[in-house]
Image 1: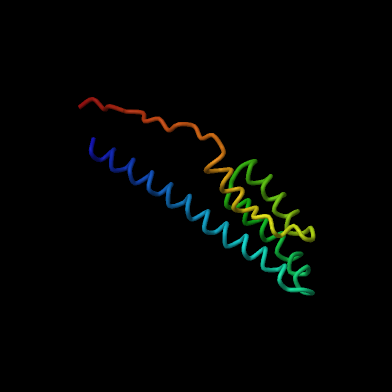
Image 2: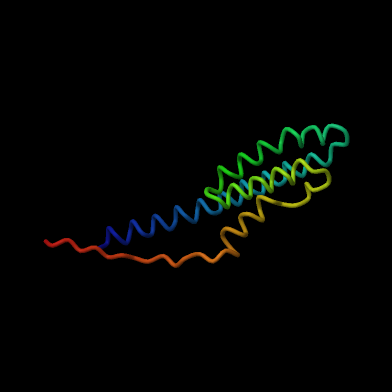
Length: 114
């Protein structure tokens, strides 16, 4: 019984660490995407290079249909002029972990005949 409780606590801690790792990465990627606006002539060229990279990172960070849709949004946001100010990675994190209704975790107890 103690072993099962320990595994549950470790799993919850790992999920929490992963959650905040995604937030940190998202903030870094948003800042990098916004930084190209500060460079007058070279910035738009960097956006052309940054957009596919950002889209790939978004789909790697968030799996499934939501990650694919978010990767399209981040690509468009980075490739279109003057839209770099939107923190797409951070907004996706907020959607995933704050706004989206998460199903409640259920504990299924399995007993082995001894």
